[in-house]
Length: 336
Ligand code: KG4
Ligand code: ZN
Image (cartoon, rainbow, N blue to C red; front, side, top):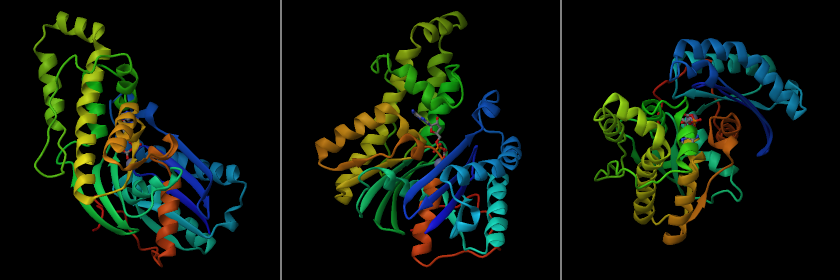
């Protein structure tokens, strides 16, 4: 089955062609430059840019895959969660495109896209598996018993892990998105430079707002001149210390969840899965605890449409299809 996948839930306009599980093209047009000067995504600008980009991005996905639109068997599109205006651009386009081609339309939960992006790792995780979704908008720990049968073991109570990276990077004067910037700076730093708090809740939920506040207070305690000196001389140490705190919490939760569920396979997906320290520590814990860790290539970690096409293909294979009355669901969650 040949599926066109579309993704426009946040600040990436993406289209991909998937042929029976093989990625023929995976085009991502990021709006990072557009939002950088504001230090975060501006919804109005995002939806307008999706409108400008959706047609060229789809054209590029088709031409790179060397397939004509008339050979598509289905169109899969993210319908939530995400920014309402941004989702609407992708969904409206997908509805019209599917209707024009007279092929099925399948709406995909963006989180389900991330969940199954683990399948792009080689080898892909067998079922059942434990999945840590860590992105700019989400931090969820999900046990996948089998496809479309989940238990959500934990999720963030406040900021997502990527959001924590982004907001703290902003306090350090680093550019948006902050995760890659902190990852890069941290490479040369001392993770024990400052002991930032690791919030561990009784259950498997996460909380990162305390860390952000603690960084804010840490910086506020200095005089202006002293703060500037610390941020100049110890930026790498501070980044390494913050990164260690976030990674400790994530890896600790995975360790506990794997113990509780007896999971033998663990996938780490979403934009933050690009983090080198998280990948390294994940592999270490996996070796210690005896579970296999699966992390897809970077292009499938960040928001992309190949994962939407893949999740859509799985849904279609399970007999699902949406009508053209499908609407966006900005607060969509993973259904247990
Ligand atoms: O999955 P994604 O592209 O979009 C969302 O669904 O949110 O994730 C984007 C997030 C951003 O917060 C970004 O800072 C973070 O992923 N990120 C990283 C790294 N690369 C991207 N965080 C830590 N280390 C990285 N190397
Ligand atoms: Zn995402």
